[in-house]
Image (tube, rainbow, N blue to C red; front, side, top):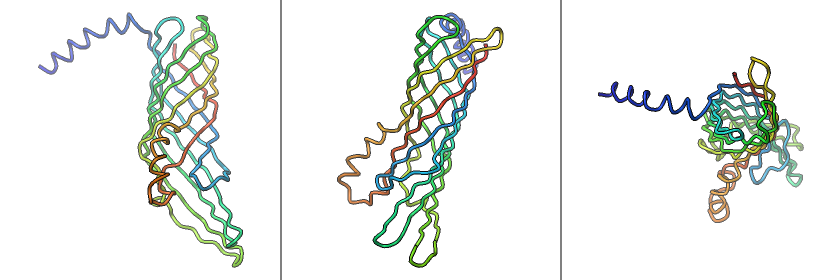
Length: 224
């Protein structure tokens, strides 16, 4: 019964998918600058993010396309806080590894094969690894100490980033389509869910997830 149902669904949907949309598989890589605000530490250094994705793109008309994918992201940042009154400096290294599930809508300004486009969408993420290392430097004693502060930070396992970008795709003869796309991403909307807790809860402020924003350039290629 189950095999018959699967066969029926394949026979029913396959002709319609081929008739309604053209599918293209692709890959992308995106180096970015990352900005992390944990509400108390404002100085940031050595911040970056790298992301790679496999993608599926299908067209809906001459101007609109939908893009879904599966990706991996590594983000690292250093932020520091100085306390002159007690002669101490806190330096925190933040490293995160995430699985990404991008869902985007692309609008092309022309029907030509090579064209400028705008894209926007949502990128749900699942954290699969994290490390937060904190180093305290005491100037009065010329010494420092380090500790693993991963469990003390309130980074969420599930998150979602809004992404906006504009780029240019170039179609080559017989090879496929290359594109370059500057983009901006932020988890601002999911961060808003924590504002009431942050303002009115008695928990320490550092237990709440930080605001993470990135700006980068995505390089990609879709098969013909």
